[in-house]
Amino acid sequence: MSTTLTETTGAAERIERTAQTAAGANAVAAAAPSALISMTDIWRTYQMGSEELHALSGVSFNVERGEYVAIIGPSGSGKSTLMNLIGCLDTPSQGQYWINGKLVSEMDDDELARIRNKEIGFVFQTFNLLARATALHNVELPLIYAGVTSAERHEMAKRSLASVELTDRMTHRPNELSGGQRQRVAIARALVNHPSLLLADEPTGALDSHTSIEIMNLFEKLHAEGNTIIVVTHEHDIAARAHRVISIRDGQIEKDEKIR
Image (tube, rainbow, N blue to C red):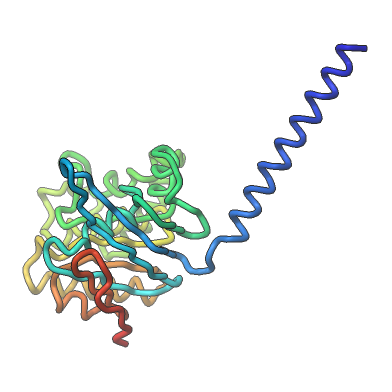
């Protein structure tokens, strides 16, 4: 009888804990903003000896699905810190950050890694391609981490390279490609997982002016196809290609305006 009572009590406790967990998850889901990205009162503070450095101070903004946003600011403005937070490469010291209904500001490192792989496609100034791998294999990398089968990721990578007009360069390695072609491979890699957000950090910083225009034209095409894009830059002519510009200075939003 005692054993039966203990088992019954334990089962009841497990049911109660499950119900509480479900209720908590439902409450979080109900609180999730409708915007793709929602940042509320975001602070990022670094300890410098006995002093605190506020890289971001109370930043709040939303990005809706399908928007094309540029974040611009001078060196030391906090734009790189903000990009790291948006990309889940860092977490805020204070405030809430939601992406696609998920409260990432309270996630641990493993959870953040899954969000980066599933929700965010990164494009970097220096391309970050594997030197000995072909364009096709470079584009496949996020799919390998996501556990996609070999045959499926091969086809997905080919489609992604076709979307940036590099079908004829799939078997080439980075040293056999121009700077613009390398950035197109990086963009194809960023898009292959069908992320919620394409996040580009100074995407034209290593390119000449003619190639920069080609890459920005590609971003415009990708936006027209429905992709949500955030470009982080210090160049005003690059920011002007976006449809909305958020200006950062001294760790705060100085201006947030739609320009088209």
